[in-house]
Image 1 (cartoon, one colour):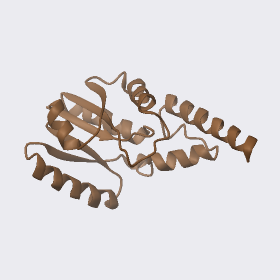
Image 2: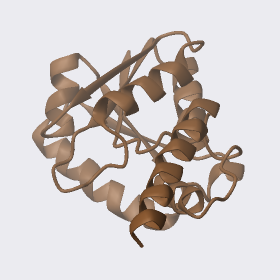
Image 3: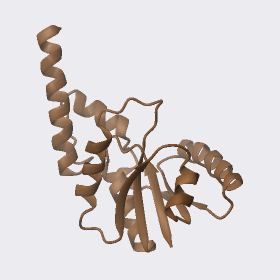
Image 4: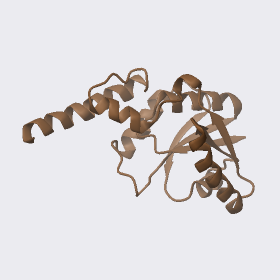
Length: 167
């Protein structure tokens, strides 16, 4: 059975990576797919996010990396995934994700949604929190894979340098 783990992954966190590793033990294959969401302005380009995920998952058997736009449930059907994997950090995540899962069930009854609880030590992580810490020079090495931490440092050092020149 194949699972689809969709998200913006801007950036990939250790919480995301934990779910990918655990899903890889449960499924024959896991497709980690970056959703190109036109309503969001990502910090990293699609190519950068794909590369970050690829580098972080290289040693995990059965993991593929891709991207899509449009409805997640349609992409799941197109790529042959029977399960959409979603991570939950808190009850607020569940309420939103349950509504989406019910909607997806009406659109594609053969595609199931599986919720996995984030490991407790990663439950505080979100891409937004990581970017905020990195923006202000905080250490994110315990929040993201090494390559992502380097990319964040480059991203925000460059922004800080340009802001200081013009600010």
